Structure formats: C-alpha cells, structure tokens
Length: 123
Image (cartoon, rainbow, N blue to C red):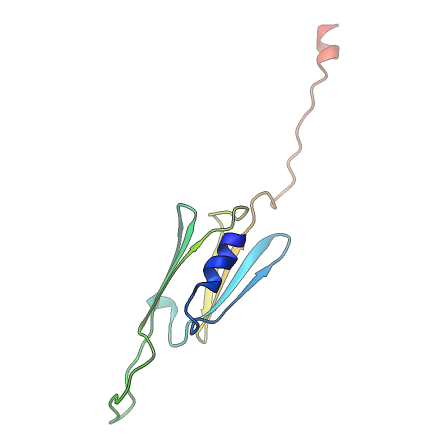
C-alpha cells in the first residue's frame, strides 16, 4: 500500500486524487476533467494500474487558443497494492471524476476447511 501512496504523491501537482480504504476494497478517485468513458482506458496487469485518458478539447464558437495549458492526455502508471486483487475491479467516470474500486484479496466468501482426525483413521 505504501508504494501506491508514494506513487500518487509523485504525480504532477495538477493531478487531483483521493485514496480511500475499507475492509473489502480500495477506492481511487481521480479527477479527469473533460474525459468520457470512451476516451478512458483503465487496465491492471503485472501488478500495475494503468490509466490513460484523453480529454476532448474543442474551442467553442469562433474562439481560438491564445494559450493552451491544459493537457489533452493523462497517463498514470501506479503499483497495485499488495493485498488488492487484479480481478473484479470496477471503474466509473461521471462528470470528469474517475472512481476505481479495487477489491482486496481474501475478502470474499468464507472458506471452510475440513479437518481430518488422523488418530480416528489409524484405529
């Protein structure tokens, strides 16, 4: 988990995020203004979270750019927390806010293990 927090702190100052944790999952909330689900790609592979976003940026009406400081692209590569699962993640984007839920491993259903009495079998 500390590797993910360190990587998030190393992001550019213009990338706004929140990282939350519950008993069952992590929730990464990342501002991606001007991005839609069609222009956003989120992948988890080899213990890494990859977020690639492209913002729609068309000047309105007869306007043209005099100065352009807002990037069209956002590429984020983060380590997956050690106890997070690489399966079952969910991502939603609403009004330029990405919410990525990463379930923790071992928080699903309880597994019961049968215990065999070796003494009863040898008697």
